[in-house]
Image (cartoon, rainbow, N blue to C red; front, top):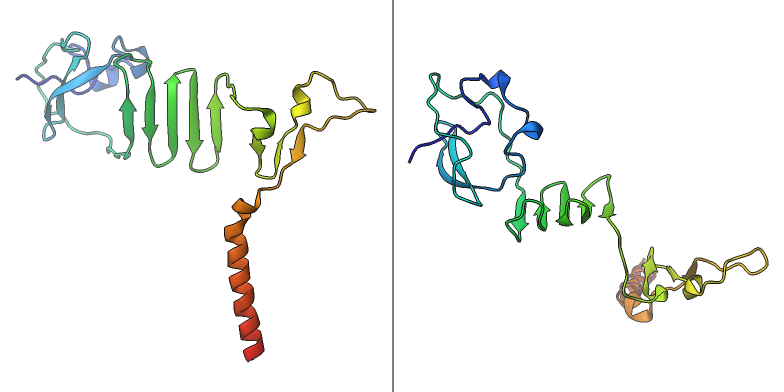
Amino acid sequence: MAIGRADNQRGNKSISDMIPKAMSADKGTLVRIVDFDPAKHLVKVVRMSDNKPLLKDQEIEEAPSQKKRYKPTGEKVLKTSQAGDGPIISANDNVVSMRGNADYGFFSFREGGGNIIKGPISFGVEPQQIRISGLTTLNPLATSGFPSTIVTPIPMTNWALPTAAAIKPILTNILVMGTLMAAIGSAA
């Protein structure tokens, strides 16, 4: 099986004349690797749609060399369809994302970026079931259609402290620590 060049080099152009990735005719094409030679940095890929190679096999005069050090990213990807813009789940050391397509998705960043929801969102629960910051819920009166005024202000959130079931493990720990501190204090 012949092996084609791993980069986007066309014809006799040098590496400095390569087409930028974003301008490539093959941008967004799903491919399948059919042959790989790590010793020579060569790979043969075919299109997923028709199993035809992206480029014709080429002969080169100089031995291929790796100019830039490759740093593997440990990224794991799950793709559910063959479409280039279809649903995808990906995770690496910095971000986890679950996307329906390029315009909709959930993103969770390890540092700095927080959690982002991209695109329209809808909730299938009543406002008082949407918890904000653990201590408040949305006020169900906010959806009643009556606007807030100075005379009749309608708060956006209501206090909703967690139930005893959520606090029970914490209280048990506090009780044990209090007992130990009392025992140490009386022994001293």
